Length: 108
Image (cartoon, rainbow, N blue to C red; front, side, top):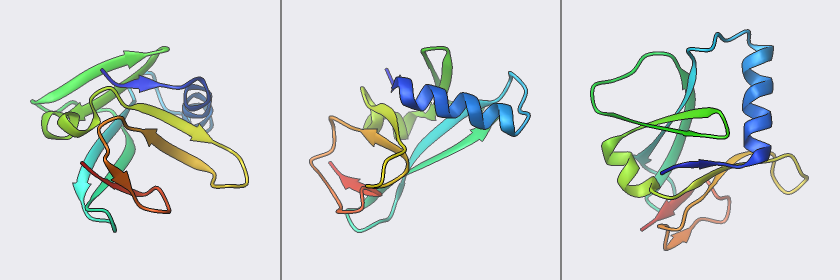
């Protein structure tokens, strides 16, 4: 399962409204090689499903990921921070053994 925090839900809703996205758009998350810790998160809005997509919904937000990325993201929570210490989306990932100082990448 992938989870969505209340703050991420609110921000995703406002982005979709401001961008005039239709209801068929969802959040696509994936894990790619790169970053100072070895793996990086990638997030975007999409409206086209792929054959091996894994579909999750939490708090009314549909989150899609590919099977390979789900192995790294299982039980993670998508969060949003609007504070001075770094504004933006990030993941609370119980599978990560370490992450870099900027929070952009992680290792398992």
